[in-house]
Structures are given as C-alpha cells and as structure tokens.
Amino acid sequence: MSFTWSAKDHKSYTNPPAATGLKRARNDTGNKVTVVLGAQWGDEGKGKVVDLLATEADMVCRCQGGNNAGHTVVVDGKEYDFHLLPSGIINSKSISLIGNGVVIHLPGLFEEGDKNEKKGLKGWDKRLIVSDRAHLVFDFHQVVDGLQETQRQAQEGKNIGTTKKGIGPTYSSKASRTGLRVCDLLGDFKDFSSRFKNLVQQYQSMYPSLTVDVEDQLKKLKEYGERLRPMVRDGVYYMYEALHGAPKKILVEGANAALLDIDFGTYPFVTSSNCTVGGACTGLGIPPLNIGDVFGVSKAYTTRVGIGAFPTEQLNAVGELLQTRGHEVGVTTGRKRRCGWLDLVILRYAHMINGFTAIALTKLDILDVLDEIKVGVAYKLNGKRIPHFPANMEVLHKAEVEYETFPGWKTDTSAARKWNDLPAKAQNYIRFIENHIGVPIKWVGVGKSRECMIQMF
Ligand code: GDP
Ligand code: IMO
Ligand code: MG
Image (cartoon, rainbow, N blue to C red):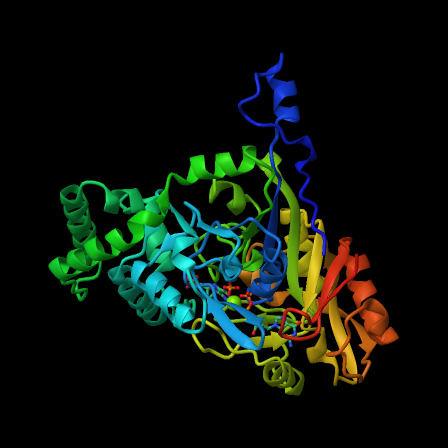
C-alpha cells in the first residue's frame, strides 16, 4: 500500500530563513498530510479506509464534527465503532489527535474509550492528544438539539433528523462567541463556571422548558477536565511541530461528508461543520500547502440517513435490497439508511470542492446479486441538462435524474483481492465511474474487513 507522503522537500523549521519569503515557503513546506473525506451523505466507509492507511501512519487526526460521526472498523473479526476517537486509535504505534475544529462531548468521549477498551483497545488515552482550542458539547446542547428538532417539526412539519448529539447548538455557541473550550475548562474554574452559567441562562431564555442542574454539571465537568488534562496540548503548535519536525506520515480522517457540509451540502439538511477539504486546514491549523493526497470515499451506490433531497433514492425493491444486503443502519442512531443508485453528479460536485487525488469505492460486493445496475449521470431541469449542483432544495427536488444502465455481474466478489479477480462487468462499472468523475479509483471494497480492499495502484 502506498500513499505518497512527499516528505522530499521537508526541512526543519530551525534552518536559517532563505533570501526571499516566497522561496522559503516553497522550500520549507514540511510534511504533507493525507486527507480522507466522505464524498456522499456520510457512512461511505471512511473508518475502514482510514484504518487501512493508519497501519502505517504516525498520526491520525480528526478536524471537524463530533460524535455525530460513526465509523466502523473491523479488525481480526472484531468490530469497533468510533464516534469521536480517530479510527487510527487502533494502531498502537500512532498518535491520535482531536483538533480545534472538533466539538467534544466529554462524557461521550470517555464512554467511547472505555467501551472500546473492554473490546481490547488498550492504552488509547495514552496516545490521544486533544487540542486546547476544541469547543465543548454540554449535555444541555444535546437536550437543545432535541428541542430544536421538536420545534422544527411543529413549525415546518419536518425536522432535520439530526443525531441529537448537540452538534448544531454547540457550533452555534461557537459562532456566537459564547461557547466554552477545552482551554477554558482547564483554566480558571471560577471563570469557567460563571461563563457556563451565563450560557445555560441564554439557552433557558430561548427554551424555557430547559432544566439544567448547574452545580451537578459543573462538578462532573471538573472531574472530566482532570481526566482530560494529560491529553491536552496547544493543538496548533503540536501540528506545526508534526509538520516541520522529522518526516511523519500524517492522516486526517474526515467525519460526515461533502453533501452534509454546512456550506456545500444540501442546506438546511446538513450538519454544522465543513466536512470538505477546507475543514482539514481550519480544524487543525494546517496550511493549505501541507495538504497532500485527498482521498474521497464513496459507496458503489448511495445512502443517506435523516431528511433531505436524495435524487437517486429508490423507494422500491432495489432500495430495500441495498438496505438489507448492505446492512444500512446508522452506527450512531440505529436508524435505517435510505438507499439508491450511485449518483455521479454529487461525486463530481464533491470533486469540484475537494480536488480528490483518488477515490475509494466501497461496498461493491453489495451489488453482486443485481440483474442491472443504474448510475445517475446528469440532472435535468425542464428537460435540459444542468452543469452544476443546485443550491436550492426546491430546485433539487424538481431535478430529473438521467441514468446509464449496466448489466449486473451476478457473481460473488467478496473473495476478490486484486483487479483481475473481479468479473469484467464489475470492472466495466468501476472504469465508467472513474472516467465520468475524472478521478482514479485507488481502492475497491468488497467486504467489511481490512483485507477486503482491492488496491488498484
Ligand atoms: P463511515 O462513517 O464513513 O466510516 O462509514 P460507517 O462505518 O458508518 O458505514 C460503513 C459500513 O459499511 C460499515 O458497517 C462498514 O463495516 C461497512 N463497509 C465498509 N466497506 C465495506 C465494503 O467494501 N463492503 C461491505 N460489505 N461493507 C463495507
Ligand atoms: P459519518 O462520519 C451520516 C446527518 C444526520 C442528519 C444531519 C444533521 O458516520 O459519515 P447532526 O447531528 O450532524 O446535526 O445531523 O447530518 N449526519 C450523518 N449522516 N453519517 C454521518 O457521519 C453523519 N453526521 C451527520 O443524520 O441528517
Ligand atoms: Mg458513519
């Protein structure tokens, strides 16, 4: 397996500066990070791809989102699910970093660590680093998430279908500059307590039914803070040293996905962070020049959890087959995932934003039994193809999908380990996707576990 680390132009930052700033910037870029991002509506198999790459990584980082993510990794027949912890935590030789762009629910973090420890994940807390700039998700943010969903349902007749993990309310607190961060919790606790009380009051004035046992919350937060303290670092400086110290293999694990991105997704049916490539820079303090490979992860079909437009959704026997064969049930909420054909319009759109250097196509094996397979290749409005992905959801709902139809290969691919093991019809399907998006497919997934990944180059 090779992902290019491009440490070739690495120089220590202790070197004397070159004559011009411009030249120095070009010569002293430091290590390049590899980014793994969801290219659809989430649950594409990012955890599995990260796990594969993490076997040789020195550092695996989360840059955005919170425990709304659910990443499954299967190693030696054991299934782990990660929500806040980077999936690379499985690799005992690598450091895991939770960056400033992530929102952290401390009870959730420790519960997740302890649960995985019982499954055999030893020493996770010794190799976890947490940025002091990361914002905290409080229990009341999660309650408010639920109250907002009820309000949306009452006002608009529909909600977003959030994970109720407090993600939206916490990023709202962050944007309105009333949020509290890890550094605040570990600083002057008196000051933290008074800001916490103010924040509670603000939410109570918006949601009068919200009750919070402030003293009990503060007591628990103090305890969690002490447990967290040994893991906390200045995230920016930590990353700077990692980029400019000895050559390092650094991996960024995206959470959620392009079509759930707060700016580029199917707004308002999105999450509250940037799940596209910019989130790797802002969520970890990584300069754009240090971004190396950007791997997009896509299923060989499409799924979506929660509400919102889904042009290639199949509300029929095909959708049901994909749901059952693919075990399409959300890792975080246990909800059934909606299923449909692969949509190349959204993949091209995700590529416009992320500039993928390669794609991992997962769950090809789920299509093994189909007689024919369709792929959405274009959207039409009033009978005319449109070149862009519509911003407005009403327009998107009206878009008609143009499909290409492929014959199914009707062969079990789960034992395939190399390109030549795949039936010609499956190869044809993969090549079509690759050509249509204009990005090489580097991996093809044919099963849950680590070894079920065909590497193409
Ligand atoms: P993530 O959120 O992107 O990390 O993905 P999830 O873990 O939420 O969902 C992906 C699901 O598909 C998990 O249950 C994986 O074990 C499973 N999976 C990943 N790749 C493959 C594959 O190639 N074939 C099959 N059958 N399952 C896969
Ligand atoms: P991973 O990392 C699938 C969806 C929720 C909801 C919307 C907003 O496992 O791919 P939020 O709780 O974030 O405010 O919910 O976004 N959603 C995801 N769907 N996979 C995810 O993450 C998701 N993270 C958020 O279902 O529709
Ligand atoms: Mg998931």
